[in-house]
Image 1 (cartoon, helix red, strand yellow):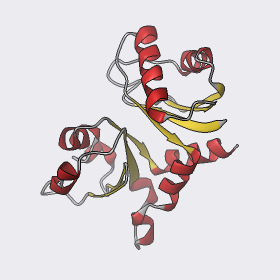
Image 2 (spheres, rainbow, N blue to C red):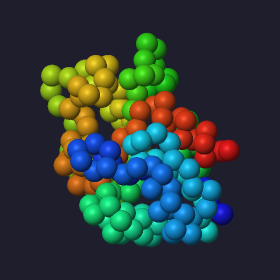
Image 3 (cartoon, rainbow, N blue to C red):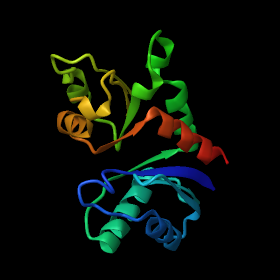
Image 4 (tube, rainbow, N blue to C red):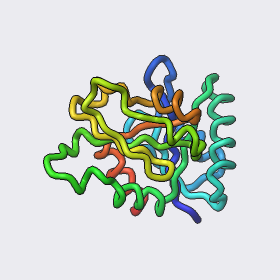
Length: 179
């Protein structure tokens, strides 16, 4: 059984209401085991015999749309991948980095090399990012609420679905996957 994390993009903000109790029930109905959620932003940890993230995400997106009536992109990572995200944050090697200003944007799939080469930080900001694989590590000294480097920015520039979690939540989700 694979331990997996599904991160739903944009739930419980902007009118896409998804109660976590109903979400856990929905995942259990899909024959996924040991289903747990973390906070109200659409983080679901589960176990599955199926370990193909694309197949699982497609099934979950279809079921969520049928149940709640709207499209929600689902980004899936396994325990090993999330562990690599935790170990690979390049900003943790720098001095004077405030961990509460670190974020990770999880891309649903690899963007094209051409688009990756073109993306740059908008002028007039001290925010920074580094893309490693399907993750974008962010350092936003002014906080995520003030950054131009949000989901919409990366989705538009890279033409892939994405969802962002703060560093504390990312670490907590990894701990939960190990339980």
